Image (cartoon, rainbow, N blue to C red; front, top):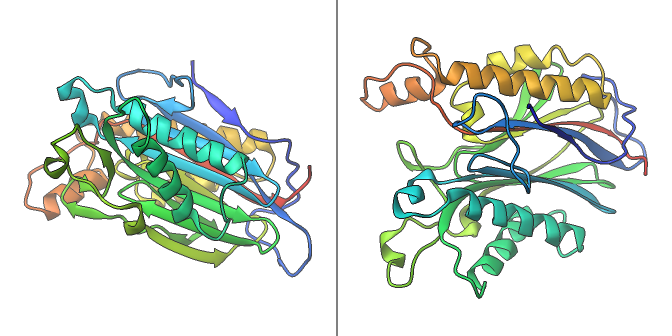
Length: 297
């Protein structure tokens, strides 16, 4: 059964395409979530908002709305480690810190850093690696603050065009920046980046802006023009429309991932790196689709 999650009792009073933000009202994000684990024919949501080895969270605080996605590194499965445990715990910790108010909206890197160091201090060892992307909307300032480590990421769409996007971070082909916890004595053998290495940005948003936050399972299989085509179907900012569009995007990416004749963005990137690759990239897919709206509690 396809799982789609909503968040909050928000009433959107925005018009797709953007409106003037020169007002004193607080802003919010109306968000729907949809995804697929690559090992399932239909979307299955694990406990804790995980699709396969991907994880996500949607948290609300009086000062901000905060979203996050993480992609657990599947290679750990070869060593008997469930990759979803690391990404899922990282996102759950981020969510808890936000709900407890232990964050600063303008510093999403701080959310990631504090959550990661909590994992390092766990009495029960937690092994694994994950990429991560955190998006924070400051209600009063109408500014979006982001932190992205690795190849998950976000797009901001206004008037049918991408006006902001995250930068992908790769050490080399198909090896993204990642947070890791290695077994004792093996730290030097496991790729591990500091949370401070995350690419961060801050910018103003407008009512009606569309924010798409996703793991690489989406971006490796759908180029921008396909995503924008799907977003054109989003004619209003009520939750049902957002939910339907999020589902449509996730479903299309999932189908393309298993098309052997499709020249996916991942296959094109592989060819650019001297590899003869064609087809989609089977992977877990997580999509958070949001619209900036007037805040109503």
